[in-house]
Image 1 (cartoon, rainbow, N blue to C red):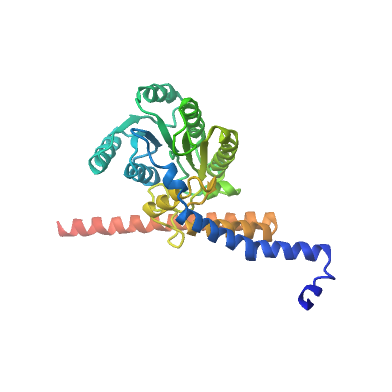
Image 2: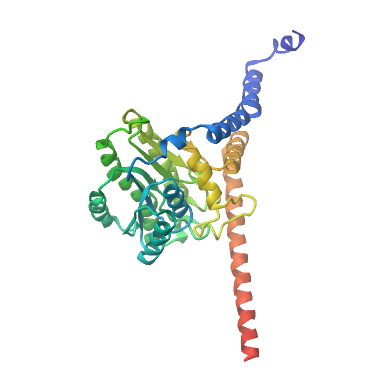
Length: 342
């Protein structure tokens, strides 16, 4: 009772402060633990990601990194695959590798998502499929090679990023959703289809020197959440996946060792969240980083937080430039050695 009596004289502002502190000290950590337990022991993703017959999973940007790993793990679960990327030689190699490894149908379609004229061809390809489409992974995307000011990139590069990151996700979702809505519900679980949109933690905040990239990922987050609400009644799941740094070619210039996770580990954790989390950071390490970022943004003034993010981006830029400088010096040394030996 004495402990409770100490709260009698608190002002409204003090109560607000106490509530906020309780949220971050008690609720948020408990929520992280509960979500991990649900994803670890819940049967939701195992029930949902169990193909019936010859169902297809479609993956864009499927020849490298996260896209390839989604393709591999979905094939492992028993799905036929349709892989969509721009380089035919890579598609052939990946299709042959996954077919040999898992024995399922693996088809592919060549499409450059920076080009807006590709979607009639994709529609025609999907019309050729003889089995239902159960999963779409909108993974294709591009990023800044290095952090730069908005006007330091060519205008055509900005348009390519918008087409690859925004137009692709919008159009692929539109094309596949229309097909999923015509499909019958699965008998053992109320679900017609699953759309997984690969976004980024960059889309959860304004990010100086990554302006268009972060804005494109924010668009994905927003549209995914809206589609999830609109089509929940039709038993279609729309999930947003927001990684931090994963060990991929796309992030090779900007990787920081303390935040990087392997592609295999990341996708395994992310797939376990299907059916339990509409919006997820996928890997536990990335969930912690995201919550720390949110906390920091709430504790300090917006201007200071923007300045902090700017300094982080500048540091990434300087780190990349230093790596490039060392790489050039090492290359010159090796060339000199070859010249001396000859």
